Length: 237
Image (cartoon, rainbow, N blue to C red; front, top):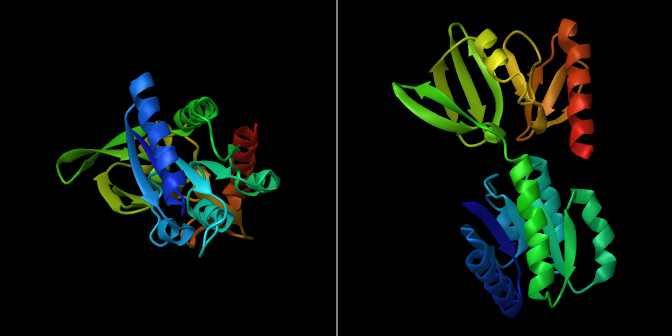
């Protein structure tokens, strides 16, 4: 199931996009979960990073598409963004929020389907693996992209996700080995940080989405910065 958001204030343009999505589903055997918003403020009001792709109109009454996209990028570095506009000069601004591209209104189906192909491919590449956690005697599947960091507390671990916490029995050593190729890196003895959610680094701490701040120990700082640089460089490439 591919989760798609459509942010558009014009009802006819909204319906145009929805018709294209339904046609694409029928022709490609895909299944979309689509949520619609009539203004940028509606999607940003209580945004949770659970979309794969968002189509944005640019000019809207209260919060325009670029402003809304910037807000979303602060908490969701992975979602694929595509702008739909009748003003070609807006396209360059898409780079400010790592947008995949833009489409000009009225969008013909062929151009839309080609762009949706690209969007799905990028979303699938960015989609992280999940992990099975034993939480209170039950096995739960947690999406690694939504976990900010793992915290070690005695012989238990806490996975701090964007919307909840998972408490389970494990050790930092075990989790570090499990996540060795999943873009997680230890900032100190107690934290295993998801590099995709790091928004900055201070003298002795790293900043995460949601105004979280975690300590970086002095012995680990160089290796942490190297890992972060490699991750950012890999994404850019």
